[in-house]
Amino acid sequence: MAGLQFSELEIQRLFGHEAAEDEEPDRLREYYFKSAVYEQVVTDLPVRILVGHKGIGKSALFQIAMREDRDKQKVAILIRPNDIADIATENQSFLKAIHLWTEGLLEIIARKAANAMGASVNNVSGKIARKGAQLVDLIAETLKDNHKLNLAPAKQALLAHFLSSRVITVYLDDLDRGWQGRREDVVRISALLNAVRDIASASRGIRFRISLRSDVYYLVRTSDESTDKIEGSVLWQKWTNHEIFALLVKRIETFFGRDADEAALLGQHQSVLARYLDPVVEPRFMGQGHWKNIPMYRVLMSLIRKRPRDLVKLCTLAARMTRESRDSLIRTSHFKAVFPDYSQGRIQDTINEFRSELPDIERLLLNMKPNKVERRAKTGYQYSTDALLKKIDNISESGDFVFKNGRRATNKDLASFLYKINFLTARKETSDGIVRSYFEENRYLSSEFADFGFAWEIHPAYRWALQPDDPEEIYRRLEVSIDAA
Image (tube, rainbow, N blue to C red):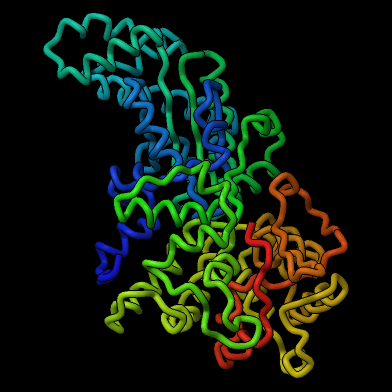
C-alpha cells in the first residue's frame, strides 16, 4: 500500500471532494456512506425536507438519491437557485408570493420533466392555468404519443415508466445560496414551502425533496406560524462520529479498490476501524500532554463537529502538507502544521453560516477566547453555567448583541445560540474520561438555555484560531474525547 504521492487528484479520490456537486459522480457513488436518514428521505411520501448544518452532507444525499431514481427509470429532476432566481422576488403579499411560487414551480417541473424524457411541452403556462395543479396528468397527456418518436432506449424506458407510474420526484437543493436572513428572504422561503405543500396535495404524483440549512429553517420556522404544517415532513441530517469514522474508512478502502460493507464497518470497534487508516495515516499522535501517544483516530474525531466535510478538510490539508514534505504517510507533524489553518477555517465557516441570524457573531466568537486572568488560572475554554453567562456578560459590555429580527439577545439567548451552532459542546467528566455532547436537533427551536448538569466547553476545532500565540498550550490542556461515537 506504500507509495502514495498525495497529488491533488490522489487526495481528492482518497478523501473525496468537499462539495458533492463537484465530485466525480462514479466516485461519489463508490464511496458514499448511507446514514440512517437516507431511507427516510427517499421513502414514497410527498414532501421531505432535509435540514442540517452546512457541510453535513445534504447535497451528497440528494446526488445519490437522484442517481438511484434514474437507475430505476424514475423521473427525477433537480431545481437549483438559478432556476428559481426570478420567482417571487418583489415585495408582494404572502398569498401572492405563494401563487407565484406555485405557477413558477409547476412550469419548471413540466419543462424539466419533459426534457428528461426527450420531449418538450409547449405553452405550458396556459395549459397549467387550464388544468390546475394536476401537472402529472397534463404531462402524461402531452407525452403519451411520444413513444412513437425515435427516442434513445434510455429515454423510451424513462417515458414508459413515467406513463405507468405517473410520478415525478423534484429535488430542490442549495436554496440558501445568497441567503441573508432578511425579512423578504424569510417570506420568500416560507411562501415556497407553502406552495410545495399545495402542489403536493393537489397533484399526488409530484414528490418534493428539499434541503435547507439549519439556520435558514430556524428563521423560517420561528417567523411563520404556517410552517408548523410542514414540521412533520422535516428530517434532520446528523451523524455520529462513529459513522463519520466508518465513512472515512469506506473512502480509503474503495480508493484501494476494495469492497467496504457499511453495516460491517459500523459494527466494528473504532480501534479495529483504525487499522484501515494505516496505509495513509500514522497510527498514533506523537504529541504532548493529553495528546501524547494517543490513537490518531481519537484526535481526528475530537476535532470534527460531527460534519463529514470537517474530516475531509482536515485530512486534505494534512495530505497537502505531506506532499510538500515528500512523505508517503500523513504524520503527526503534518496535522500539527495545519491545525491553525483548519481552526481558522472553521471559525470563518461558522461566521459565514450564522451571520444571517446574529449579524455581530464575529465579535461574540472571537471574544470567547481566554483572557489573561483565565489563562493564568487555566480556566479558559471550559465553563460552568454561571461562569459561561458571566463571560458573555463581560463580552456584551462593549455593546449589546441584536438578532437579525431586531430582538436584543440576553446572556442566555447567546449561550443557547453558541450551543446550537456547535461552538459550545456540553461536557461531562466520567470515571473513564471526558464525554462531549452536542445540541440535540429536536430542541433546535428552543430559545431557553437549560442547565442539564453538564459543564460547557468551546469545541476543540476552534482552539487554534482563538489562541494562535500559544498552540502548545492547547496540547497540554485539551483533553481528547473518549467517546468518538
